[in-house]
Length: 426
Image (cartoon, rainbow, N blue to C red; front, top):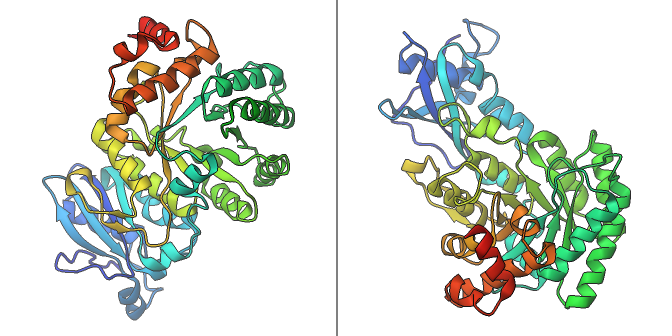
């Protein structure tokens, strides 16, 4: 059986899942043939004619390629909801971004975006806290939150790690988090690190009168161990966990969200390894799609890039990620490969700007992102000439200058920590 899936007059139904792809057919293959095979391979068809599926069932389940723009290489497909286990991100991805990426009939294929129907949305919890709930955790509503990543990424003892966290907290950081590759190494074991760093957090809270959060990385070899680590944090009174979402895998992310429903725990999503799929603009998966899946599953905040820092991502891309995280309704934007999405009851996520930031960049970040963002600094705090505590203070001073619309040079004239940062980084 070889269906013809192209029907450009077709109008997607409200209960269908819609995907947008960028496609380049292989040499000698027509665009229409590549579209047909892609739609079939992602649903009910295979490489050769078969007779095991009735024509009636095929008509009931067949997807529709309803939009083709050969000049731009853009294809839109509407998939019947019954093709999916609608509460399973792994199964959905296996269909819409699975074998089709390996077909010889296409030279390049990129999943740009996914629009979810109500039944899919309703089968997921979404974020427990989300953007507004994160603000409630801190009791901070009128400014960006300031965070740091303990540096170096790995190599510190648990005691030194906790000391760096403490200095960051008292200097002005709201958040201290682990880096992506710190989990349970011999020199800094998870159980010891989480206990003494949470102790440091509580000490800093008493001294500063501010609520502080430690985001400990619970990424683990098995789901069982990951969940055990989440329970350890919960039992110790911690309010956050961090997970490396791509390397841990989608089943682990769904398992974690289910488990934390009965805990007072927010989830920070670190996107390390995403560029394996997202950086090539012609093949793979757009980060927008990954962000939407992360929100659907129910993580509370997600790295989106910085524009001005060290990580790849232009302004339009990063701001579209910000909007996918933070808006209740996302209007379609054909130029950015974004499909219309009404999130219904799924809460927004808090966007996190992180990667190569220092205090002098904060006014630009504030102008781009506004107050609803977590600004995270690594070396931009710990490489401060006066040390970690002063680096954290310089970041808070830069935030204050941005909020008051005062130039950093003027504000630094009577704030020595910011002055020292500007002298170092400009």
